[in-house]
Image (tube, rainbow, N blue to C red; front, side, top):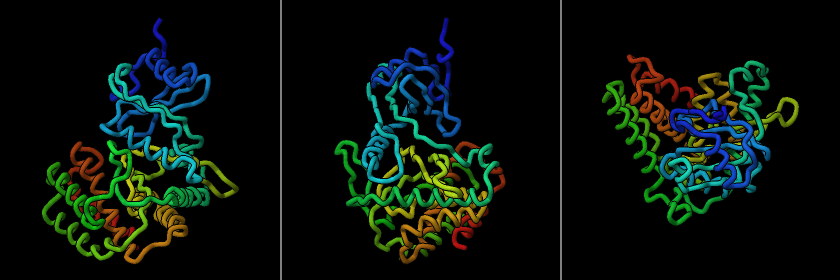
Length: 333
């Protein structure tokens, strides 16, 4: 009789057998498999939650190229150096014999996702603001770790290698990259839209040149990549952060953009609470408003270009500037 744990967990993972999952657990002596379930969050369907005789674990399979080493590197560097828990030990297997691709297993972090609709609906306005503030405080805590240079992981060297260009030039290049991707994906990114974005970036060049202390940049820091717990009446704390595949070292302010844009779409007061909690621990440098507008533009261009490429998320008649300008304006108010 086939085990009920042998099934297709997601399109990306395909059919996985109970025997394969048990073999992966045996590789790291993680106990006997008792249950497995796909994560409800996440865009790519890589994650399974595994319950075993020894505890609860997260399985990440069929990774993107180079994904697992980046996640392992930052989890190792952050573990124990901040008050925010990260997935550690991050147990990585590069041998593809078992599944046809590498995989990793890590402990499941304790906590809940307060923004899940069923839980969010039960929270008072004060608790919702406390959750947003905890998100900002958690990011500031993650960025309390000092790094010698701004750069990305060189997987061959196993260390952060400095970016080859100045910060402003790198950000400008990335904006141009996502503009090209957007324009190639659909005609909803017009020459006028592109000119407006370039004008915003040009106006912020002085602000982008202000020096910063290199900090951890998750690059996808948002509610759905954290778990939280109540820490006291009316207060919450981030009890875990995960999904480091896009992480690098840069200007910590870059990581404010995604969560701020998402929170402001729910309630601008939540976005304000998030930013205020962060800035209370990491005061803004000169030019913050101008610089942050560009960080938000770059972040939203990633979302926009993906949506245009796949024909999802956006009404067909909506143009880039029409969608983007109000969001930028909200962050500058």
